[in-house]
Image 1 (tube, rainbow, N blue to C red):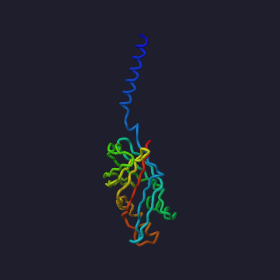
Image 2 (image 1 turned 135 degrees about the vertical axis):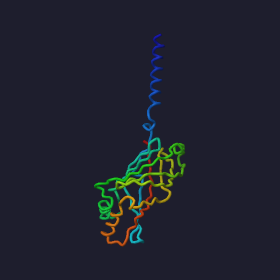
Image 3 (image 1 turned 30 degrees about the vertical axis):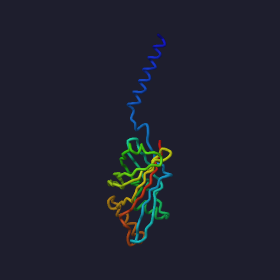
Image 4 (image 1 turned 45 degrees about the horizontal axis):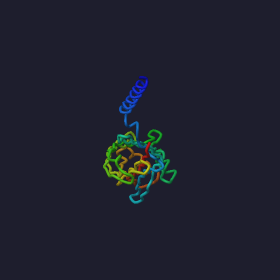
Length: 202
């Protein structure tokens, strides 16, 4: 009789544990965190209609949850053009980082096919994402390639440049200010952007 009671209690405990596991949100059980050291975000500027330069942001953070919701935060103060005085001017005159320290990306991936990828396999998909910058939000569609990595992570890469227009984010005044202080004839308002984000499993 005692043995039966003990077994009955164990069965109840097992049922309770299984029930709790079933009602817990799955997003709490898995996800991928952006690996800043293995990720890149570059943008291209064209000045005087002829001089093209590639720049980058060096501090990125973000997350993909188990439902495919993507967030990525760009530290605008981490802009790197290889010229310190230009970096400072971009921070102060264009981005105004004292008031707008970050740009934010958000998107939703169809995550189930990505979970089924084997190591080294890739998938191309169009992604609708929102870019929030300087108190403005724009929706942009871009094709990306997603590769499954050996560590269980995901590498997300833009297949083609995404052109961001400064005037759509009220940054055209800042571009003109940079043009004047650098004594340039023109700086293009359309900025091609390329990204490669590596998300490592949590």
